Image (cartoon, rainbow, N blue to C red; front, side):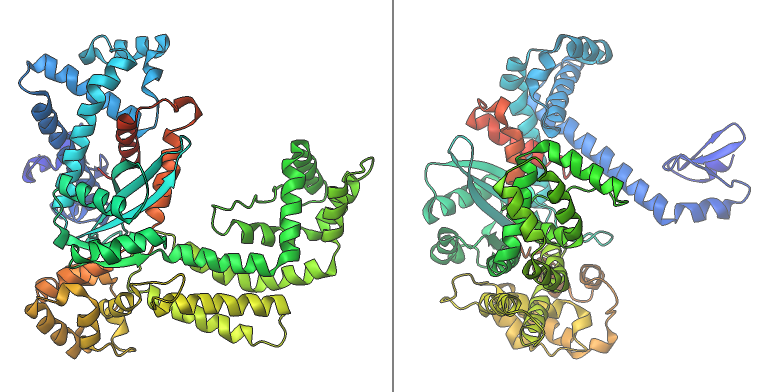
Length: 564
């Protein structure tokens, strides 16, 4: 049998066909070489890796549960394990545990989950099984972060529906994934603070790091918004504890402020955006009539985007949509006014016919996509530390060049100038700037870790060593940096920087570790913003009575459901 010629049950036979045990697909068994080639395909390797990780996770869960549940009989342990997994699954899917009290669901689960017997009521599951599922989760999270060479800390604060101060603290481990080099954020704790100031934030962050056994020397960055108390927490406290770290303020927040410059400059367009939003939200039936109107005129049935203050780029999207449908709006709202004396409809129709609105929208169609593209890029979780400095410099140059363009409207020129000024102040890193990037020089230094930059940009080793704190007490890394900079022609500049440094670790062991840690520093705090969106999903209107202690458990199990 051909299957016996390969170890570890890599293939199995069924009838007269040979199947790969990992992919479960038939392979050509007439030649051994064909089977060997299948084992080397990228698809098979990816599936095998995924299978190994799944089995490893299951084994870890079983060991962790055994430790958490103590010495029990096999049947008792299996029942406990099943119930803990059930609670974990419901929390990860953000399904309230009281759903399990539904008679039909209980009957179905009990008849199909023989190992758990009678399922306890939701109150029992919350009291006895939710903490066990959470403890297993924390143990696995500790193990994951413990194996990372560095960790970036991201935190932000909000006020929830119960008027509590909520501080979410997340960790982003060092990225060493070659195939998909993205930054993955894990929620460490959802903290309820009595008050929000630099002392309570610093205290909460340090206690959380101690709980997860994360050494302050492994912290590569403290990533926040530009709130005064966050800046003070770094400047007066954490800077002297995170000796290898840097303080990063959110680039996406800055770009959103740039978008606001355009909103305030294009006041007439903003009137149109607000007027159309009001026209459709005040009369839901109008949405159906507008879709019918578009259908009758051979247009794609699309409703206008609704601009929301907390959703970045939404104002630009709405304005660009209105630019495309401006003529249709005028005809539609003229028909809507038949038999109606609404002054708001009259205002909307007049704005749609305004030459001023038309010319301003034409300018927005020309310039907005470039700014929207930058914001979309820098609210993602891509590895961007080596790109952000150059990208922002190019954006400033673009804004300044077109601000001097004679064909622009005055409002466009003002918006371009103010946007460039705000970006320039941000990148200056000066303490006098209202919104600044304290890590501006750090990100300039990070350009050195992209080998493709070495042939086009001169980046002095002294500048890198001065602005990357990891070099302060590592003489070997300094020597490796000099060697790396001296031979740019020998480097494989076509590789993604993460892949390059993973491969370069044998040649530059200390420098590779520093490079990967720096590349893994996030340029935004969007992970914290997204964690608050998920928090709102957990604390919805029908779950407002969740206890504070349970709330953190639910939130963490929900937020981290894919990563652990």
